[in-house]
Length: 265
Image (cartoon, rainbow, N blue to C red; front, side, top):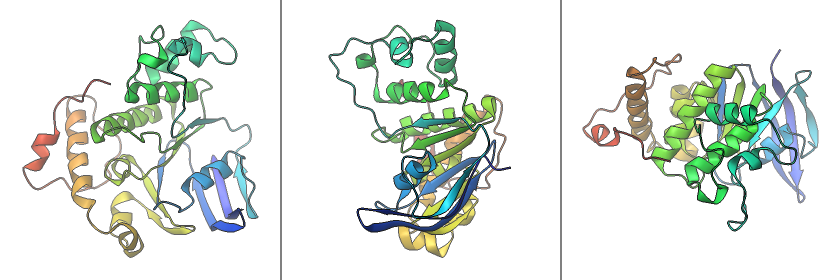
């Protein structure tokens, strides 16, 4: 059974229909990305999945006992508030140090439990939000444009960590993003949304679909190839990548300049 299944869902907000007859599903162990222009209903869909919004018609079917972890676009914390990472992870109820340390390690940010939240970089802050979402060992991880505000290299690093989470935990992952150059390359399946599902499938299939090109054009293809080259290069020195998405590598010298160590986050 799918972790979550959306069947013919329509949603209205403020009298306007934001989503119309949307159907999709997420299976355990797969990474699914939702892309779409501004106002296409991406965040509305996620809010419907977690139960914050009720559909006008259709239904959302969740697997029995489904545990959902959620990483928001951003979270505003008063920079003058003296709170450590470990204490933040323990809100509203304190958790064991070992549990917090394990979640931070899975998020790729070990040994920062004693650091002040105000001292974190943007990339570190988002990884702490990821660690918080991983505390309950979710079956399904939802990310709503979780790298908003990060540069391209920081985004690539974050999404590589998401792939690592998938490998370690076997959870299903549903991501919403506008960062086509990074997210599509990190996905098993892409859903193009514009109030309704325009097209879906493997990244290379969606990138060539007329519906996708009508929304985004063809300008992202080179960036997709460039990211894929850097991504594969990084795994050549580790354990390899379990999913070959079939994206072409870049064909010019610009890719060499994109390689190298990621900036410290």
